[in-house]
Amino acid sequence: MAVSLEGPLSSVVAPKITSSTVVSTVAAVQIRSAQADYTSSDHKQEWDAYWANGGHEYDQRGPSVALQELLEVHRWLLPRGRCLVAGCGSGYDALYLAKRGLPHVLGIDFCEPAIARAHKLVEAAGGASALAGKLSFAVENFITFKPLHRFTVAYEYGLFSAIAPSQRQQWADAYARLIVPQGSLIVVLFPLIHRGPSPPYQVSMAECEQYLKRYFVLLRVDPNCRCIEGQEGNELVSVWKRL
Image (cartoon, rainbow, N blue to C red; front, side, top):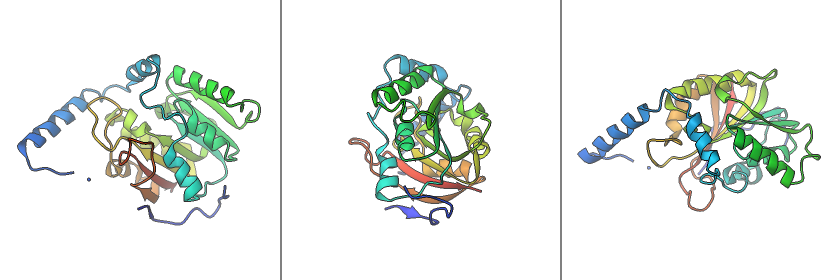
C-alpha cells in the first residue's frame, strides 16, 4: 500500500527483520565490517568491470516497472522542466521519461560503456532524430557533477545502493545542489534484501530518509511497488520535494 504524505505539486502538468540469535548478530557485524572495506572507494573499478562483462545482471530490458506504475497507474504528476537521470546505465528510464514530454532529459553515468550503450538504445529505438534536443547522455560523476543549470526533476534507480556508504551524505548534498526549490526527486531503492558486501549494497527507506530529510520533504512512499518477476519485495519507490 502506497502512502502519500502530500498532494502532487501545484505547478505541474499531467502527463520485514530482526533476530535475537547470536549467529545473526555475528553475521551482521561481519557484513558491516566487510562493507567498511569499500568506503574509501567510489566503486568505479567494480562498475567498469561490470559493464566490461556485458552489464547484464541488473539489466531489466526496459524502463523501471516501478517508475511506469508511478506515472501511468498512479498518475503522479511531474513538474515541467529539465530532468536528470542519475546513474542512468543503459538509458531505458531516461528514454522513457523523454517520451513523456519533458522538455529535456539528461542521463549521466560515470562508466563510459554505459553511456555508449544508452546512445545505442536511442538509435535502435529510432528516436535519435525525434528526440534531438530533448534527450542527451554524458559521462559524469554524479557526486561532483556541476552543470550550468539546475533541474526541476531528478530520478534514479539504485544509485543510492551503488555508491560507497561513505558517499551517502555527498549523494544527498548533490541532489540538494542540483534540484531547484520545489523540484521533484524520485528514488527507486534497490536492493532491500541483503545480497553481499559488495555493491549494490542492501539499503532501506530509513537510510535514504536519514540523508535526504535535511533538504527534502517526503511526499509519497510505496513499499509494494510493481517490479520485474523475481524482484518482488526488493524495490521501493519514494517521491520527494526540494525545500
